[in-house]
Image 1: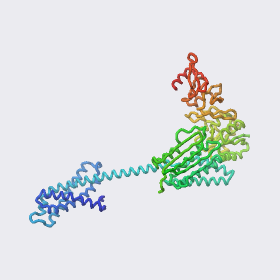
Image 2: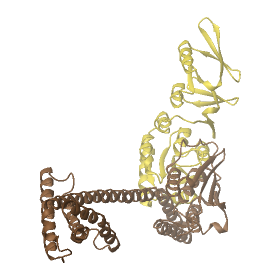
Image 3: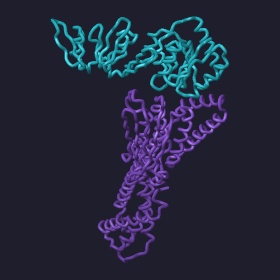
Image 4: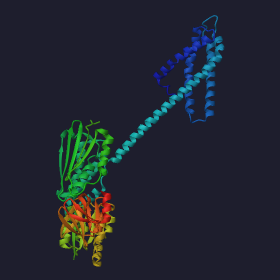
Length: 353
Length: 244
């Protein structure tokens, strides 16, 4: 099916556009014979209309013979044959019309005019076919490049999605090993505590699986997940691990990427609390500053332990995720002094939806 | 009777080993330690036969604890991280328990520990010290034990190190710390861009160098920012000139 057929408005414009070739054809008939303008117009306008549809037929050949994908001889031969056939068909129809149309003058008769101008009309028919074919090739090329563009866009979107998926936090298996070991220990000494820890661990895992399926979650869900993680770790570390939260209420509903805080909280435990004999406080602060959500995580570190060179995988993944999602609107800043480590991330408060 | 200590910074973890050991009548737990310093102190004062040792701990990790104890002792590592296994065997650990583990697995470790203790094999201290350091990395601190006390000296605070027979004397912040190690062994753990062997008996932190003076013909001394004067060998002088 030709792309113009079935699209009423465009087809109308196309046919109207043939008024101009129709006028040129009329002029040609007047110049190359003794026809009056009235006879020439009556003869050529229907012919132009017919040609408008004959030209569309070239579409099917053009599609079957893509440029560059066809042997040149076959390409030229087929189009030449089609041009001759198209022009001949046109002339045959023109001849029928010339005889059938009402006589407009006593001296000059349409069949005579037609016979006299047949060679010129044949050439015009060939020309029309070739122009039509060229037009279709241009259209095919434009469509192809548009399709390639949209495919490239699709691929880009897919790649971005895959990247975001890869950057998403994975639960550290050692967290599970250590938790299971704690449960194993509690099972012998305090069965109730062992059961409570099983439930905490299951809650945490279930929530992280659920949140991980979404592209955005509410900030308070993310905070609850972090709290769940810390609750499990508190059983392992006992009094060494304390948690403080200071959350601005209106920030709770803000949409955030899921599992964004998880690697940061995990770092605070494994690179902070776990190195300290007496442990310390992990502090989570959330506030809204102008149009940004600002999340600050502070944890104590061992002053005698040299800061590790460069950024860990967790931190750099969070950074890349933020820039992939928010672009330059997101920031992640890390500050370490002798005894504390602080990571601050900010990104635009997007409206949900 | 086998005297054992349990070292782990997580209380539930210590509790589990203690509970499992309850089934072994020939074992007596003489101490539980929550960090590396306590472990070194307990190992020095209580002279246990066997240590159940976590690897990731605050202050001192399990390998550093072993380096500092430096005496005959059967070691069973208890950790959630299996990537330490190779190093554990390098330090001739009796066994290696991955958390969580069964009482049967601990009984197996105990069986191996009994055999090791009966055989009377020694724990090679030098191999231990070398294995305690990750391959290809230079130390950022030097650990020194004085009786049950452990000092942690960040390498940036070291002025210079002097060889004294089988020991090295590490000079830092106006104090000298004696450590049982040869100067050559210590030299391999220090970053050569910061620490230079200026003499058969001296390693210098080049950040502390104030100036080098000609002392006699072909004989130079280094004067440190804190005032000490150290001899500089001729070969070392050439090396120093390149570095500075």
